[in-house]
Image (cartoon, rainbow, N blue to C red; front, side, top):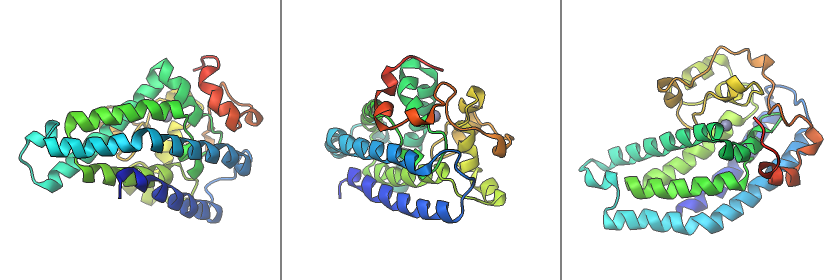
Length: 261
Ligand SMILES: [Zn+2]
């Protein structure tokens, strides 16, 4: 099976499982209509999934095979056991996604696209794939560059795809989770409370907690924010508070509307 084909399988399984859990063990009552939000978020992720599949699937798979066969990339030059190479490959991919996420907040051009994700006024499993294709388009090229530069092992890439899907859907989900579980989880990974702060309408809170799979990058690089009253977090972005306007077609053109913080 080609690595990129795993995406839809894990995506749809996650959507169904987390939706059931959100309805059964809801973290908080939605401030806006969940159905209307899903009618924006789901079509966006379907369009993205199809476009990404056709543009990047073949090239990423071909590059993974090519770098392995030709021994291209930094990791290929070290005589390490396979399990260590695979683990380092996963760490490199996760660190790259952390830096890329930070740049999406710091570089005005990238923020134009990334604000589509942050404009969601509630957060649940559907938010995990609410992205503008422009952002995914840039990130596809970054992935190709990272695979080529580091010679990422195929298994690292496949495992990382699975991890990203499971963890992003989990930390966006609106499931009531015990604080004890979150305290253990945050030692290495990103729990929903940590990512909820990142979705705060307050810019200082939003520009923190960039981690996707691992929480360690935020801790080591000083971007970790905690001790925020979770009940008081208002989600979304200050410049886009008109919920009725935030439908599918508007989200598609949002990056090309006026610049906002
Ligand atoms: Zn963000």
